[in-house]
Image (cartoon, rainbow, N blue to C red; front, side):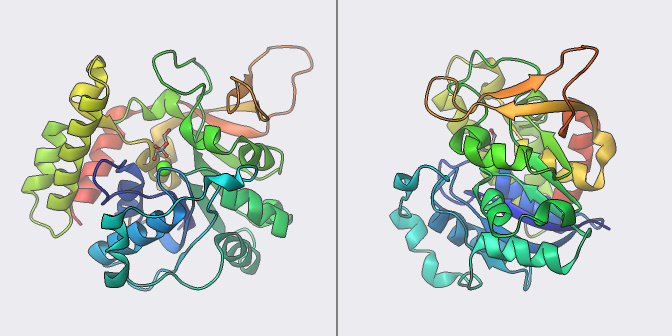
Length: 318
Ligand code: BDR
Ligand code: CA
C-alpha cells in the first residue's frame, strides 16, 4: 500500500481560493489504498502561513488524527521577495486550529524518506520548492524515494487561452522543477493536458450536497462557490461556466489507480531564468536515432469517467 507525503499549497476554506488541493487531501484520506504519513505546506495558491492554517482546519474537518503538518517554503527558490501574510479571515482561524508540527518541510521530507528507503511516495501538488530544498539537504533522496507524483506542467499542447506561459506550479518555481527533473528521482507528471479534462459540475456538487456524511455537504458547497467564482472571473470561457478542474485530485488518484492515465516516457526540461518563456516545459518527443534519455513519465491521456466515479464514490463517503 503506498505510503505518502503530501506537499501542498492548500487554500480550500478561504473564500475565492482554489479548492483542488483540499480535495486531493480528502481523497488521500478517503482512499483505503493510500496511507498518508506527512503533510507539508508550500507557498503557491496562497502564502505558506495561510496554506498551513487552512490545512490544519481541513485536517480538523476531515478528522485526520495525528498526521503531522509541517510548514515549508515561504517563497520560490530564487524569489525571496514572495513572502506574504495571511488575510484577516484566515488569521482568525489560527487560534482555533492545531499548530503545525515544529520543523521545516524540506527536512521533514528528507528525514521520512531516508528513514524508509524505497517506501515513500511524495505527492507534490504545489510549486516544487520544498522538494528541491529537500534534495539540497539530502541528495540521496533521489535514490531513496519510491517515486514522486507531481501535478504540474503542460506537455503536448500550448495553452493559448490561459494567462500564464505554462502551468502555475512550474511557473511559480521553475528552478525547483528543474532540480527535480535533473535529480534522477522516479517521477510521474500529471499536467494540464489531462487535468483540465477532469471536471466537477454543478450536478456533481449536488450529489455531494445530498450525501449523508459529515464532509460531503461542505465539499459540495465549496464546489458550487468555486465554480461561481471561476465563471465570474472568466466570463467568456464556456468550459469554466459550469464546472471546475480537479487538477490535484487526479495526481492523488493515480497513486493507487495508475490505470486512470496513459503514460509516456519522455525527456523533460524547463525554461528557467527571466523572460516570457519562464516556466515553460520542454518535452522532447523527437524520434531520432539517438533520442535523449527519458527522465520522467508524463500523463498523455485520462479515463475521465473512471476518475470521476472513483472521486465521487470516495468523497461522498467521507
Ligand atoms: C495547479 O495550480 C493550482 O492553482 C492548482 O491547485 C494546481 O495545483 C494547476 O495549474
Ligand atoms: Ca495545488
